[in-house]
Length: 240
Image (cartoon, rainbow, N blue to C red; front, side, top):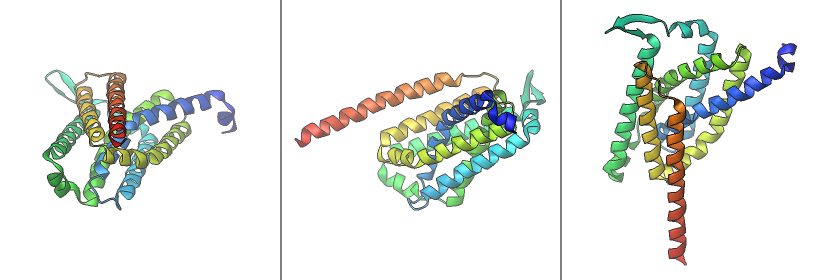
């Protein structure tokens, strides 16, 4: 253990893996913020905290059973000359779930405030189940990434715990910002649709590099930030 702590490569892999987990966790925070927004404001912090706790527990359990996780990539059936694994099934199901969720939420947002408010308050348990399903899909990718970047289980777990702490601290401000800016919420829902399509592509053995998706979202977010600044400047000029 002492040799592990004094090895510079351990700290390098911990820092790199923690940063990567935080970047990959952006969609997790986004989904948590949007789904928890369906609940009364009093319950939203609890839902976000519980959702991240479920994600942390799920990732640690998958890491401790890494041999089983890697076996999920082994084909169990062949359809039309295509090998299908349980990982493909999970990713495909997760992709369909995100596309459905993003589409329904966009519909509610476009339907107008009255219908949106009518549909807003939902069962706390239903929201947690949705978060749990989402966490299952993204925990799988997160764990496989962790295994590819670090050699020691303790380093992987430490990186995931650190990333979750950062995500928990960011979830509150992000949720508040999304709720106060409907255009940002629409952008976030569009991002969820993109991720859903990427998961379906992965399930079909057609990998879309995540860097392309994140660049597209970052560019869209930058444009939205310019719009926000422009709107505020217009309001300031009108108030003068």
